[in-house]
Each structure stands twice: as structure tokens, then as C-alpha cells.
Image (cartoon, rainbow, N blue to C red; front, side, top):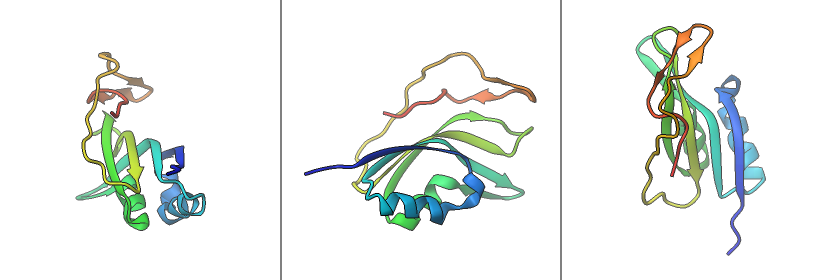
Length: 117
């Protein structure tokens, strides 16, 4: 069995073109793709998980782990994800950096830095 792997930095939201991202994944017949800078954006009481939108569009499974939470200064949580045509039986995260991230607007709250296992 051949499995096609991919990797994509979607820059948190990629202008909200989740169907376009899903189309590229589908057109290239990617079975498992790692997504960097995936995000959950908050707009008032609503939230939008970019990975969930893409996975639903494809009918795939996904796992997302936050790397940092920039709230309340910025309305997002950013992290990494895996989207898979195959069921994800088990997932977990590993702390890679114990130091908080620093951004021009201040220090983001580190959940555990980029990781997926």
C-alpha cells in the first residue's frame, strides 16, 4: 500500500479558504498531512478551527494541539495538526521548549510549544 504524505504551513487561517486547501489535498491524493500554524480564531462568542473545517471538507480525521495562546491580545490559538484519511487511534503531545514565546505585542501563553506524536 502506498501512502502519500504532505506538509503545509497554512499561516493560521490562509484567508479562510478551507475549501481551497481541501481541494489541493484532494487533488494531490494526500493521505496524511501535517499542518503547521493551524489556528483557532475567536470572534466574540464564536470560534473557528481551521483544521476542523479542512478535515470535514475532506471527510478525514484530525488531531490538533495548541502551541501558544495569544489571547487576550490577539484573538487566536495557534498550533500544529495532522489530518489523515485513516483513523487516528492515539495521539499525544510532547513539550519541546519550556520557555514562553515572546512576540512584539507581549508574551504568549505557552501550552507546550509545537508538538504532535
